[in-house]
Length: 203
Image 1 (cartoon, rainbow, N blue to C red):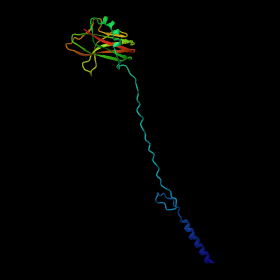
Image 2 (cartoon, rainbow, N blue to C red):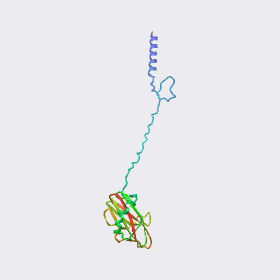
Image 3 (cartoon, rainbow, N blue to C red):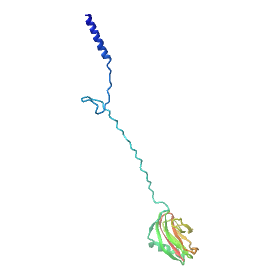
Image 4 (cartoon, rainbow, N blue to C red):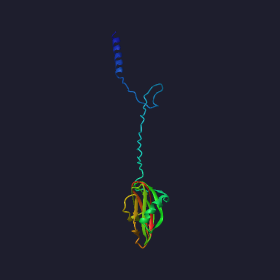
């Protein structure tokens, strides 16, 4: 009987010792090829990376209309040049002859048109410009020795209103230089818009 009790006690100690030495192993994360067949294993799945692409906004284009200082739209001068210019020629450029053809333009306020002109030595010039609708029309004779240089004013009108006369009433502008001078006539719709025509006269 005593032997049985001792055996029982020894068996209980062995069982107790075996239980206390057991350790809990946390599950390991395995790759796709490490999981044994028939068992579920946690997969180490990489978190997808989201790339955000920032697109710069397109530049803003500001559209502007025609501004002052641009060229008038060319129009045919023949239809209205004679009735507008002839009365002024008789009073502002008596005894003078037209130099080249009249030039006309349809202008908005601030726009200009030009007449090419070569000032011959010893010759005298007058410019007459008339408009329909333009409230203040201005004109000048300007030297233009080189195309890329700004023109140099030589003579300009001093009147106000819708017509402009440069060096009129017998006081024509004379080229005192011994050589021909490249020049041009500039006509400007300073205030208001409408059609305008200009003619150079010489003697």
